[in-house]
Length: 98
Image (cartoon, rainbow, N blue to C red; front, side, top):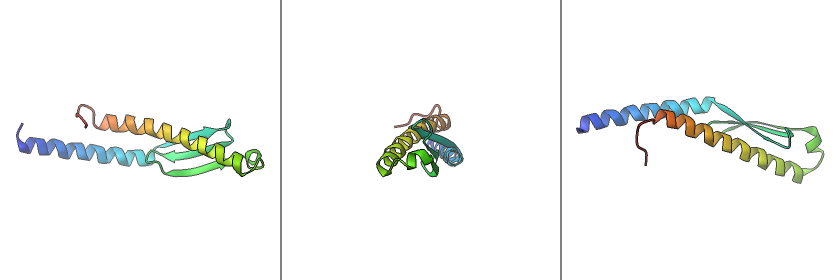
């Protein structure tokens, strides 16, 4: 494989990865805890777009809210990780990645 061909492949891969990152910025996942007492909407780039906390949970105090927000965040992040793996995997399909 010559250098020109290698550079063309690298450029094409970079374009695909950039497109995948832009796509991820528009995709959303929801993290849920406490049977819906906390719902976090997160983008595929880990930006938290919104958080909803039920009045019932809020009335239980800060410690309960903090615990449920942490669980909902972890759920959203796990789902975002899976989304990122899928979208980036599609973008880099067939290209060996380190």
